[in-house]
Length: 316
Image: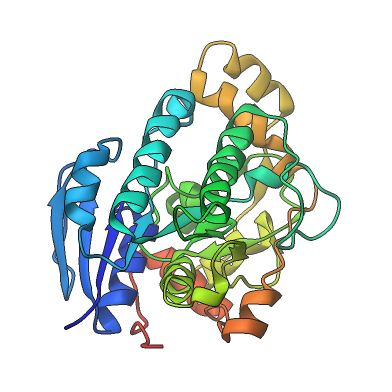
């Protein structure tokens, strides 16, 4: 009988993880608040509130792994949204015995002046970064206490198929760039920055869930060498057969003035450092230890331009 994997969160990362697991022949349940969405081969859907521990326990009964791929609706709700959701996942993992597999970001490291590698301390001081760092600290403490098995995968800004403008900085400007218009990006367009394909997040989540030797630590999803935002946008244009466009950074006063009246812009000020200095993820560990390579950059750009997956998901 195939193993049951329960993926909570049906955004780009949850979808990628579900498709990868289904391609490997597992039984896959994809959970979202509505329980609806496009048909995915080999994937069942259910509705649930991710903060409802009893419902997660019900859905994860008999599962080998429970994946937190939840994406909050807005930066502005993180302080209220994440604590009950994180607590529900910890409770469900402990009560069902399913391995807790967490999809996360690089925020916890805070501003750094070197490539980010696993094992660096979570030293961030900003609000959203502390929330994500605490989520992993709590999961790791439960793991080390023997209450659960937990593992976390971190990725950088998302590119690839299914990434909506709200989910990625490159996706936010893709339509305008492909229409030949000048685009503006957060921070500086000439600083090296890592971009992670959502399919590589999905592959990494599926891989660590099934490798007990990887549990109890953070892993970085396979990620290509960094590009600047200007280079990434130019590459996406070329992948669609279009000429690159002019890329400019927003003047700093835009976030300052806009943040005074628009909560979402105010929240972006916390993460502005990611785009004003090099922001580079080193994913060498997962390549060396699990053999996972990033999706070729040309394909990442093609999928970003078209919004579709042109590669077959590969069984491991």
